[in-house]
Image (cartoon, rainbow, N blue to C red):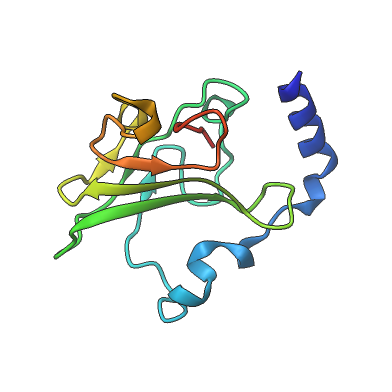
Length: 141
């Protein structure tokens, strides 16, 4: 029932989307970095591509494969999943994935699977996650 309500609200509030100005990378701490420093490629397609439903929490909740060129002197990576098109006043943060080893140059769905004590939010890819989900650590976009 909650999925039906969530989809209905999303449809009704469709015109309330597109809050790009509120994204984290456009906030004050990133003011000196106007352009991306790492280009991330996604198996779905370039930025702005429609997201197939199998990648949403309405269906299978799969994470698409992400890849990038290794960055010189990187100690680790941080991945922030934000949704500027959520029908809310501010973008929704789906997750902060931190401690991604510098040796990694791609992430696939299996990397995002929880391991061990779910309260610690450790993931199979060797990194951790923080989300706003009440359902636990893993929260598909």
